[in-house]
Length: 299
Ligand code: EPU
Image (tube, rainbow, N blue to C red):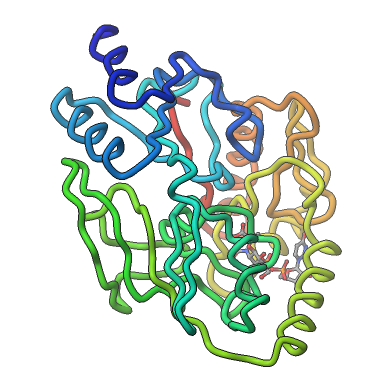
């Protein structure tokens, strides 16, 4: 089995074995993965997927690792991270063709420079275009789905596909279709707008987020999805959890739906805080809090 995995480096040169994944995540948490492989272009990615399929190897596609909690014991599989060629923005009037590795922050800067409106509310959402598709990233009335015209990517057997999503494919923080395993690019449609108005809105979003979210600490953004009728942050705050620590993990004193890594937090400690919150929300309010962050590995 070890031999099979070691063959990945013959397909994708930029492959590291037994790599600690913590530095690749926003939480800065997580143990070793069998291999971290970074295909540099479409051809390497296609061959890699064909190889993994042929050898029944499980894999996980990593974006910027912003919504992710990896187990302290790591993940017994292959982690695929797209190489630099998948980080691009091509502008054609109000349509942008963007690579899946492109950071939302870069896309926002470019759209502002081109006076193209649509992403202003995303200021402060860390992550890649690929991650934003998968999670239907959003804030306030904005969700990424509003911009997406088409998605290009690969099926797990290495077949390339182009997909035009429809309204039913998207939900709150979810993109349903599982046809495409690895997103490589998307075509987004923006609206032309007044750059001063756009700049004003971005400044407001910036001020609000800086004032209400602990952006200065490693975290994975909001831990729980908002349940119906109340913000998860408000509920957790009302239950008196702000500031609660287990080891190096703390429920933020600034926004109760964030768990921050104050130094050397372990995944186990984050998970204990999550369970503590879920138990109390269920016992005292009959609310089932569902996590927004993705867990990877065995907990
Ligand atoms: N609130 C509290 N205590 C807290 C946190 C919030 O009382 O500790 C109250 C606020 O005062 C406000 C209400 O709860 O009245 C809503 O708070 P906020 O505006 O911060 O919005 P949210 O519902 O907690 C959502 C998203 C965030 C996004 C913000 C701003 C979810 C789960 N959260 O938070 O998204 O940044 O709106 O648009 O949808 C994320 O997805 O990772 C994320 C952080």
